[in-house]
Image (cartoon, rainbow, N blue to C red):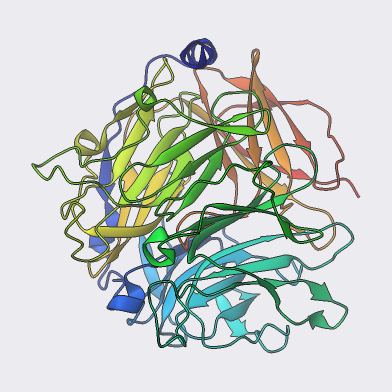
Length: 501
């Protein structure tokens, strides 16, 4: 029945997928960033993708681990070859990842910088300049090992609620096994941020996402945890945000896996987001059945449990996962960054990243080798984004102890639409909004969120593939529940939609 549902939806989309092709433009950098470090940097290695100089081109803040973090400015010409150059920033070590978010609501994106050590919150000043506003905003924290982040604007608040996920407790002499740290929630006060609210117990969080996954108007907090260190008793978590409380097992059946990253996207066309969770071994896709999550069948092709080339038949290790329409056929595809933790003998050592293209039958097919992205470095964080404004999603990958990769998409692709939201009040990114694009009888639904992935976040336009259609209709359900009118849009153009006052 589910296969039939996918197939019927796919028939409304564009024709058969094109063959993806990519070229690595990071090779043009004089000093490609490398995420370095030993045990405390086995996990981490993320990238923040955002426009820090207001030129409508996404720039990159790349975690360095024991190496300095890098800021790369996008110098690509629209439609031209992807190109980046370095920006001087204060030397910052210990960075595991970062997420762009406009914390103070001034219209300039800030950075939540996660670290092994005290986290930092950088206020954006424009022109890719920043200042450390951690203390000014009341977010000074201790010597933690931070590996996950998510945020949202709760009703009546001008500043966002922030949640930080921590891995193993660095101060536990009996660790690392069964020594997972608790997680931290910060709510705004009139004077900035107040004391940390502890989310306990923690199970070694590696990804978090606040999402209105039931489309009820009430967002919840999902946490993906690494059973390698919690060992027993832990599970993938779902929390009510306000009042803060864990879901009862009757509401949320508990599963345990080596949780690394979270990706969320409606791929069935019913308006409810599915959830992809990476792990060691099977990568678990769950289908949202009216608010009840159901494991996808193996035949859908998303489990990606072993390397697809070479002779290493041991299980894969998945990290960052992200949905995106790589060939603009109107069907979302799936990228998964792969790589052994270090020298874990139970898992594959040579483990290429996945590029799973969704076909007309709803089945995902591996194309990483023919696309040219099947490198064998230990990948960690990543992102799918149009880097050179040519209407095709490119791929950014951070590797552990190896240079990062910037893959320019040079494959054939269908029509597209780029949608940037300007929110009301201090929620300038319109976090919590839903964008719906209607082409014929089919509707693609996207939620604006902060979080997910593997210590890698994005801020910027939403990308839609339209297939052969040259027009569609779009509307926005804004964070306060206001439902915008359907309006006609033309393909192959960026548009900006502004929230009503």
